[in-house]
Length: 181
Image (tube, rainbow, N blue to C red; front, side, top):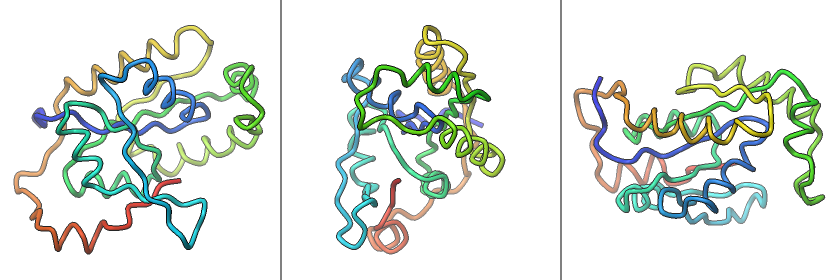
């Protein structure tokens, strides 16, 4: 276990992860940045985030805010980017409704469906979470999130003793199409 020596990417999962990413990017532009994404022409819902874009953000001393799948988190760990993965958890669709209240119609999502997705995600992928934050009110979750990010960034992580070969060919062949949700 040791400190990685760089600003780690940030991945948020949970029913308000989209809101949290937007708020962090807006409120703390000096600490967070969203990587550029390329459209995948074969699937309009799928976007590609290149590792080089994530690395550019890390090199500027910022957290790359990522909207990626759990499988992509495993890939980031493989290339030794060691993302901070925070699960925003609730067991109540009423809390989800409360936290998403007042959003534009385009951001409205079924609280029941969001809750079911989160329960499934926790059941299958909890091993990738760095920490969890329980969502129970409108006031404290954002402060808890910022505190958790700072704590995770300052802490040690399990790191491989050997460095992954970072030749262009290996990175290109394995991770060229790093897909997001």
